[in-house]
Length: 338
Ligand code: FDA
Image 1 (spheres, protein in one colour):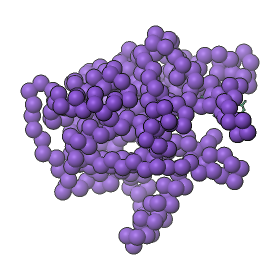
Image 2 (cartoon, helix red, strand yellow):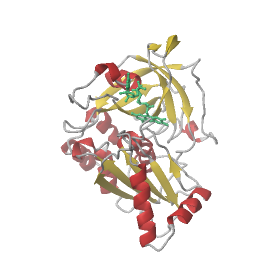
Image 3 (cartoon, rainbow, N blue to C red):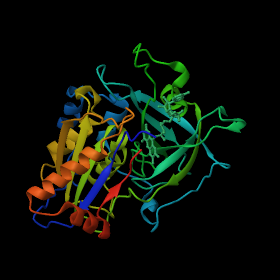
Image 4 (cartoon, helix red, strand yellow):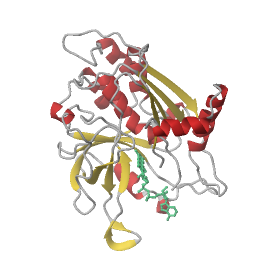
């Protein structure tokens, strides 16, 4: 499979010099900071790409049920391929501008609170129809990283959000889309309508869970494309939601590789964090190009990211190989490539 999306998270030990001053507001307690009407205005004027249904949610971040905090281990494989859960599509919205290469959609799914998950986990989706390789059998499950916190985009613990890139194939000679080669599940998700049913499995995955042991830690996050999904979830938990058991006071540093300005995902949300939490959030966007391997297939961003980190380590007089093995040993290096 092409390595196309790369979320890499590197939490670094707590830096006590980076502290946020907190203040209380009367009713809206966005992480003890007022998300005032000015912020809401900014969302509107910022040409909110995920439209009002998502943007208007910034006015409230009281989350429930708080029992979702009580579980000590992440939920895993509550629903399996043979006994999937039937969820309902709440909304599907295009996330990118007209000049973005390809289409990415924000898909909200109602699971009724029956498929709880933690930030950084994935759901499986079994697209309708027959498996073309095994006639008579259902389609294979595809994994999607969850882009919302455990409370979902509506803060009630009943929905999960995906950020889905429509997989299409363009004939290199004609430049035209070949409909016989379009991805089954991503197209099913991006074409679905509110009220449609969806078979989900999971949740799965532990590698990209947000490390919460030290609420003052530094988290360095690097992503391209829909690889941003788990980081959107982390950042909502850090900066948007008022969660009694997790008060983030560290530094979250997000690097996004994008093809062009129209491809930026969730830029409005991230820009708001920057405005409201300049001491706790850094946000760097860079133009990125997918690399190609010898056979001409896309080879993702991972080699470029590794090369850059190596160069930075060398500039600091550090040996990258040693540094990387130390990060891995300390459980400070988490990578998911797909
Ligand atoms: P499908 O599996 O049908 O096809 C795959 C590719 O093959 C497509 O590019 C398609 O164009 C091509 N193809 C289809 N038919 C062909 C033919 N006859 N000949 C040649 N080529 C053909 N994705 C995402 O959008 N958001 C996310 O958050 C995540 N998260 C995630 C997490 C993890 C852990 C994994 C492993 C993967 C993801 N993915 C993802 C990827 C996702 O699981 C899935 O692989 C893609 O959405 C593509 O699935 P489709 O069913 O759409 O394509």
